[in-house]
Amino acid sequence: QVQLAESGGGLVQAGGSLRLSCAASGNIFGINAMGWYRQATGQQRELVAAITSGNSTNYASSVEGRFTISRDSFKNTAHLQMSSLKPEDTAVYYCYAVQTAYGLKTYWGRGTQVTVSS
Image (cartoon, rainbow, N blue to C red; front, top):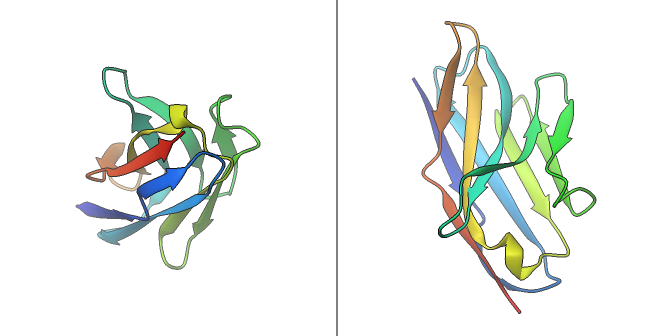
């Protein structure tokens, strides 16, 4: 099993920045991709950003150029630097990790609230 612990959410004014972190623990062997989804109230969960073990990244078009995902493989931690935040970025942000060492398994964090005030 893999456990994911998120941190860094909070309240920020529009135009501000926040940095989310996601630390993986437990049986972390073979974790490939890590990333973030978000879910706003009444909306479907959507992919925000992802990073592979080879540091390939993928971003939602709505955050491209404003958010940067990075990964510290030695610490099995992923970070999401969010800048130029907009009220529409308000959502619960969920970290996920994909493990391929024992078949394909996806693990989720509990989520962290990000609120951007206008």
